Length: 367
Image (cartoon, rainbow, N blue to C red; front, side, top):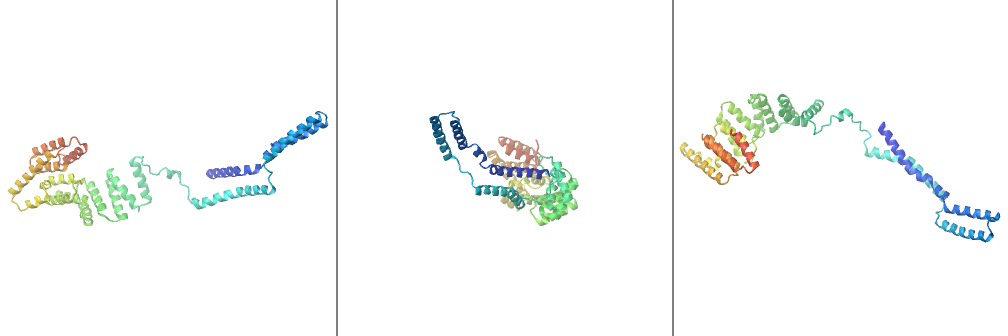
C-alpha cells in the first residue's frame, strides 16, 4: 500500500504541474499592466485640472506625455485571450486531469508486470551471493534441490563441490542423481566411480570398477576411468595389465596433458619400461631385439637425451623422461643428479620450475 500511495502522490504532483499555468491565465499580467497604470494617471490629471490644482497648460502637457506612454505600452501588450482560448485551456485541464492517470495505467498494464506477486523478503535474503562462504552457498543449493529434486543441473553443480568438501556420501548421491536426471555420459560415470573409490579409502571396489567400465564403454579415451581401471589392475596384482593401460594412455595423450606426470609416475611404480624416453620408432625397433641389445639401445637413447638436455635445458618434459628412465634402470643416483641439473637449467623461469617440481614430486623426488 505504501508504494501505491507514493505513486498517487507523484501523479497528483504531475497533474498540478500541468494545471497550474493553465489556471493562472493572464490575470497577473492584466493587473500589473503598464496600460492600466497610465489610464489611472490620465484620470488623476483630469481630477487635478478640474479641482484647479494644476493650470491648463501643465494639464495638457501631462495628458500628451501620459497618452504617448499609454500608446507605447499598448503596442507591446498581448491581446486578451478570447473566449475560445479560455475554453481550450479548460479542455486541456480536463484532459490532463483525466488522461494522465489513464495513460499511465495503460502503459503499466502493457509494459509492466501487474500480475507478478511480491518477492518475499525472506526469499530475497536467500539469493546466492558470490561473496558468501562456500558452505553457505552449498546449503542454499541443497535447500533448492530439496524443493526441486529433479533439477539435474543443480545436482551436477553441487556433486564435485561436495566431493571437494569431503562429504563423499553426499557427493555419491549427487552424482547418481546427476546421471538420473541429466542422462548417462562417460564423464558422469567416471566421476561416480572416482567418488566410490574415495569412499573406500582409495580402493577400487567392484561397484566402483563397474561404473568405470561403463564410462570406458561410452568413451574409450575417458582419462579418469582409464586411470582408475589401471589402479584396479595394480591393486589386483596385475601389474602388467596396469602398465598396459597407463602406457596406452600416455601414447594417446598430448605432451602438455596436465595428468601426464601422474600416469607416468604410476607406470614407473608398477615397473613399466622406460619407453616414454624413446620415440615411437625406437620402441617398435626394440621389440625384435634381444634383451641385451634392447637394454644397450635404451641406454644409448637415454645418454643422447641427457646430452641434448645439457645443450637445451628448457625441455621440462625431456628432463622428466630422463629422470624416469634412470629410475626404471635402477640408477637412483643418476636420477637425483638429473633432477638437480634440471632445476638449475630452468631456475630462471618460475613457470617451468614449478612444472618441473610438480613432475618430480609425482615421481617421488621431492628434494
